[in-house]
Image: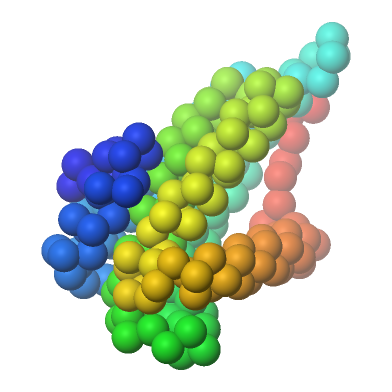
Amino acid sequence: MKNRFNVLYNPIETWPKIEKKNFTITQIYLRFLLIMAAIPPIAAYIGAVYIGWRVGFEEPVKLTWQSALLISVSAYIAILVGMYVFARLVHWMAQTYKSEATVADAFALVSYSCVPLFLVSIFSAYPLLWLNTMLTLVAAALAIRILFIGTPVMMKIDQDRGFLFTNSILTVGMVMFVGTIAISVIFWANGVGPAFTR
């Protein structure tokens, strides 16, 4: 599925191609998301266990491999489930904008829009706070641009409604992000949290 990379540098031409292929949710999972969603947990695992996070000139803080593995597997499952839940919410909101898109269309929209965020997570393998933060902000900006271009195409609505719909999608995305943080805190409080080597 070369469209996963084409959407980065030429989303205007790539989104109509994705829309015409009418991918099912299963196809998106098997041919795209199962692989892309593995990048953040694997890179974070490598960075947390073998490199460690460093603030200033202090010694790097590392996680035990058991702790990092548990967190990485949990994160991978959360990404796969979260993307589907996000797509269902987008599809539910689509009725407000008189969209005839399917859940699969919404799933393709949110999945492909996250490509920059999946790819930039590779740098988590070498955790350098200022660099990771800067690159993540750039990736987020690119993902938002891709989403703005893709929403009218994938949700089968005009540009004006697409602009408003995209803002609604971003709002839901931010709420889900905050919710994820809250859930993480609950998990950490119940033993599914980081265990440091020092």
